[in-house]
View 1: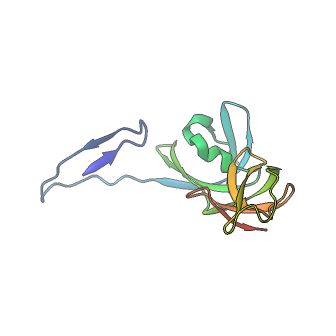
View 2 (view 1 turned 60 degrees about the vertical axis):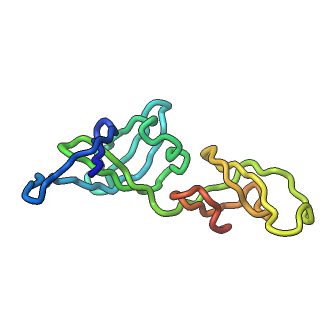
View 3 (view 1 turned 90 degrees about the horizontal axis):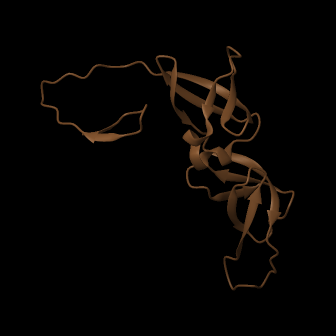
Amino acid sequence: VQVRNLRTNTTREMTFTSGDRVEDIRIDTAIVEYLYDDGEFLHFMDVETFEQPQMRKDLFGDDALYLNENLQIKLLSYDNEIIDYELPTNVEQKVTEAEMAIAGDTATGATKKVITETGLKVTTPLFVEVGDVIRIDTRNGEYLTRV
């Protein structure tokens, strides 16, 4: 099998025989609400305990662009160390910049690029304008609908 170390994000191959046993570990989950980004860390608040965990922004990579204030995500931890996160399937964000597009530019499926309040770039249909709120799929970054 190929296994991934959740702390270091490295992968390696391991071989097990039919009688080998693997020790189970307990992964704790917590629903947290995104509060703010201070440039280096992303700050959250646990909705049950009101604790405020923080994670390095670089651990989220491009996924940080999906985070709006008050968005709830799931944090996974082991031995009180946050090791992973799960975003909701889709998020809603307000469009802050949109290309000018003229209907009739193409025969079918005309699209344009827009930028949301978090800086996320999304390809949308021509009718999406600045100020619209759109729903985006967090698994692939695609436009779903205008809200």
